[in-house]
Image (cartoon, rainbow over all chains, first blue to last red):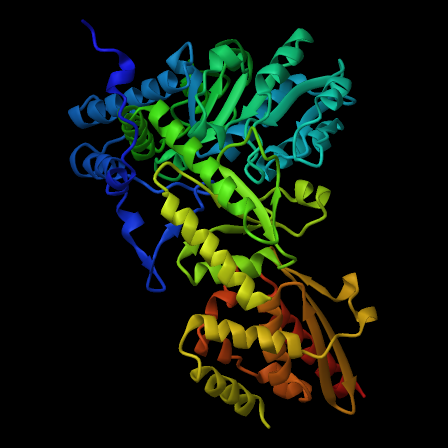
Length: 415
Length: 142
């Protein structure tokens, strides 16, 4: 008899997986590090670090260029990573995966080339009030250039998108919708599938900022039917400096190139250049080969642990964290109480987030403070910023308890 | 008291607090003791906006001496602001322009001077020196 899948799933032994991340053993100010800044960047497992070192020590070469063995091996590693990433988000074609420097560059790329062809005076770009600056400013720049308007979907007091406002603003003058799947500052999960469905009913394409979502939720670009989706490797246990842009083949073929240079061309004369096929049309210059191989390794690592196991561990930890934090006297959660993932933003009494963050730091607890590059949503809540604790599967309940204790200490010192 | 004597005094005060939390408790006490800035000086024109916290700074120039008053919306920053005001308060433009502010580093709060933290303190120090240079130029004209 075949063994049932559920029998194999053993969940995650957190003490064991922590050993996979050497940095987690660090001490800060003599205290064991409690790393709760995962939404900014995740720590890296030895498996990824080894893959990077192996590449540089054994087969470092430029890709797609040389006839020699090293170049072939580097190209194989680089392209194998692309395939792993395509499978990870269930892209139909591997060439729909474009390597960039990060989520920011992925969004800038789409904004620039999409605007060139599809945005003209009087048109609109629709984003949401909870976007990261990297999904606001690139659109602002193209709107200014094209004399188009940036429209914003409003949110409610719980930090959830107002879908009726979205429906109202989604008229024929909207040329593209760009929204985040998960808010980096509030942890809100947005109904992106529904947003895409409604936009497509009016033939409007949608870009999804999945920088936060890709770590905590299963992503299936075909099921979502997203036209573009962007994320960064470093938030999903890969190295910094490499990002991903997924684009539907039809769109990527239609849009003009972003940057010019080597790799992205087929034939160059001084009169006319013809561009390379996908994905290389959008990858000018020598790419971040090590970064791609590192991200490939990170995906192997996660697949090995089992994505369901990872998500389940994170869900359990988030529930515990919400329960413990809402029990802290004078603590106010900014954002929804349900349907959230990853980050927990809060304020303690009327203390400045910066003060709370600094006192936590001296107890070895790393949180982010400030506006988290989402100034407009902070203005909406009339606050200078928040304290943000963002969790990963390698965090423990003991660490949540340490955070609660740290906050009690902060209250005693600041009060 | 010279600017450096005032700085050395602060360094000595902090040497009594080897523990981080004690240091912070002392900084916060200083913040609470900082004379309140006149509300009508807390204008947008006097704001020094950092990424994390805001600082308000007002300078008054009387008989060749500069008098600073300041405030911050974050308590720890405000404590540091209080110390900087204490060190530079009541000095001549030249003394302030030439001052080397070393006490923040010596008491272990150098992170507050890092431009990436951009909490307003570093910008405040720059602004104080700018005031000093401006008043110095003004006094030379007269």
